[in-house]
Image 1 (cartoon, helix red, strand yellow):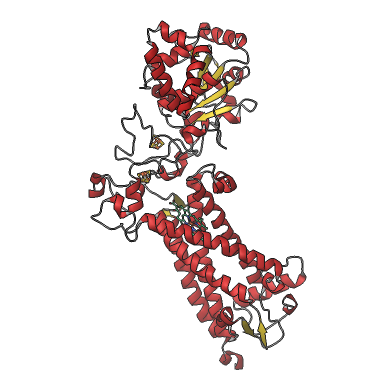
Image 2 (cartoon, chains in turn red, yellow; image 1 turned 120 degrees about the vertical axis):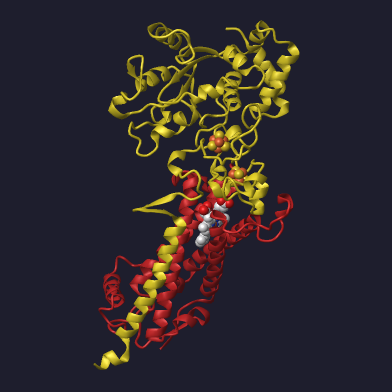
Length: 229
Length: 354
Ligand code: HEM
Ligand code: SF4
Ligand code: SF4
């Protein structure tokens, strides 16, 4: 059974998000711990515009930050207007959520075979993990623009998000939080990629290509098919 | 009480020097040059304001800084302009006599005097970790604040807690705004604050009869509106990616950016980069040492001072975010590979037939 799962908007958002986070993580690691020096033998005043300098890398980070913000807003909007794009939300209040969570946990603990039990377009484990990842990204945006704004106290970003910096115990602590959660996102991304590959190999359901063409394959009708229609 | 101009005349200061001083002062207070006539008028007409200056749990570095204020005559003039009625560290008198005087001033100028607080109250053991004149400083502080028009929190101790409030804070030392809630508190953090900043704040309050505009944390905007990093003369090296790696390397000799040896300039709000210290002579970064963030909240807990990233408490290891993060990422990859292989075996067709 071939089911259309991911809308074009969601697929575009996914890859934009992938690229920006990769760039943000790479540049961010450098910003907090510059592990190579800028071009040697040049007057610092002129080095600013030459090659991979701190100034340039920070500029890329902020640019990617704006793109991440825009794509996040886009993601929320398509989620509001299309049912299909709301599938990430966990439904704690249903019994199905809890039984699915139990089932998927047993499968991941290898106590059950993946082909046993019900099939889901998106199982309860994913529905729990994805919202947390969205929260982590939102956290990065909020702390990122909070810090960004404080080079101009009283300006737009600092009036909007300056409070975040103080809620986290000051600007220095905010930098540290921004860095810890950056690593958290990377660990989550590694696990995400792993589970996608695992799904593809074990169930041969077109998991990897689904984020390109939008379709996944199922043997039986998925239990959460109602969330799509 | 006499006005500032009268006090100046009494000190033999010429009209010309007086105008010069008013102009400098206007600059220090962060006001536009068009405000000079206003400042001069205020100095000619405003009577001096009584100040009560008390000392709690502290090291007195704020007073040390203040009396070294290098701007024209500051130590002399400011001390005679504000009428400093009580300062148990500077005054020659001591004991009951001077305490009696404090109570008299509080009564006489109720609602009109400025309370300047250096140091902070420890709350532990009912305040007995710091005793002034036989009573806990906590009581001394509350009693002195009751009739004050406004309160100045000198230094990081009074503003944030500083070293005595660093983890685990054995005496439960707290910033004074945790104790004084019904008065405007102007925070002038720094360990110590720059003398000219202290002068600027107190002169603003005396001349304009109100507290200066404050940011969300209660610090005067004109002095704490910029990061050291954004006013630092080594900033070009930061942007160019030229960093000191060790204090004895080539970069250190060339005066490169101190970010990698722990400089806290990027997260510290103070005037060191622009006003500098000792009448603009220098400041720590100019001397080759990173900023330790002395005017920031909890800066003692944000160590180590010579590293950019704080340590994460991992048993028997020195670990920061990158080390823990890299290990976690490697563990995730390793775990994924192992789990993947096991999953493959578990779900293989062969096992199904068995
Ligand atoms: C998933 C997204 C993001 C990741 C993985 C990420 C990663 C990082 C990392 C690792 C740092 C270094 C932290 C430090 O040690 O100080 C950093 C710094 C920073 N990031 Fe991000 N970041 C993200 C999103 C954003 C966004 C959306 C903004 C908004 C503009 C932003 C603005 C900043 C700023 C202002 C800094 C401090 C730069 C400096 O100190 O010079 N970040 N980021
Ligand atoms: S020395 Fe410190 S304050 Fe100056 S540019 Fe470098 S990091 Fe910023
Ligand atoms: S450079 Fe930093 S640590 Fe040094 S006095 Fe200024 S604010 Fe304090």
